[in-house]
Length: 355
View 1 (cartoon, rainbow, N blue to C red):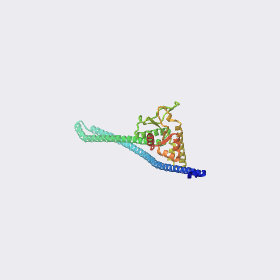
View 2: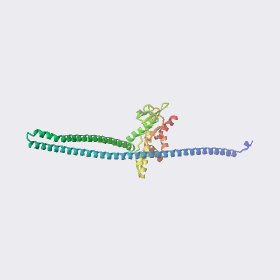
View 3: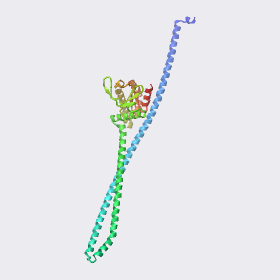
């Protein structure tokens, strides 16, 4: 009876109050969810910054190791130069000693010949036998001494020859070690400062290493550089295709230029660093654009997801781009591209597999 007595205005007030209450509850839920998402994003951002600092420290350590290799290279070069100098001095001293010994032997031989000639000239036939015996008696000790001296000289030259051979062998070993250290230092420098082709090959090598360490096998669970065609018969060659259970495939692309990032990392000038990190971000975005136009998921012969993984092989380069422009990840997702790094690649593959 009381409900029937309410007028139209009272019913309107009740309905408006109910709608306002429902909207208030919905608004509070949305705000609560937004606060939770913001907190989660802050936690993830702090984690990425910590990982960034860790990887920067690792790169700093690699640069220190490179400097140590270079210092060792210089030290080895100095040592090789000293050993070469010592070898040359030893060879020159041996030649000088040999020359002196040959001159001494020639001089003694000449003196003995002159002495014998004088003795025979002043002696007669009667004393010829006696003189011969006397001469043999006189010359026999001298002959023995000469033979001993000759043997000593030969032994000395033989030992010096062995020492020269050993020294030459050590110098060759040092040269080979020096060449190996120089090659390793060059490879490390090219990995950080190389051209796009070199960086591309290096990035594909890092990607293969991560997949191998994850237990995946080349030619079984994943394939590299597979030639495929799309619906328009356009030939494309994805860097890596990972085969998931239930005949599902994931395409991974790792061709990312790091030239600008190398300038950013090695420069102490803030203006240069600012331009370099901007160029690095532009390079990443250009690659995103090119990758989105390839439509890898439409290739014939694979059952790929709509999403493609874009692999950045240097973790700090990935984190620097995200730090410079936090919207980069969302912009990539809008183009069906997921940006991954060495620490997030395995997580992304496991997440895709579980989903």
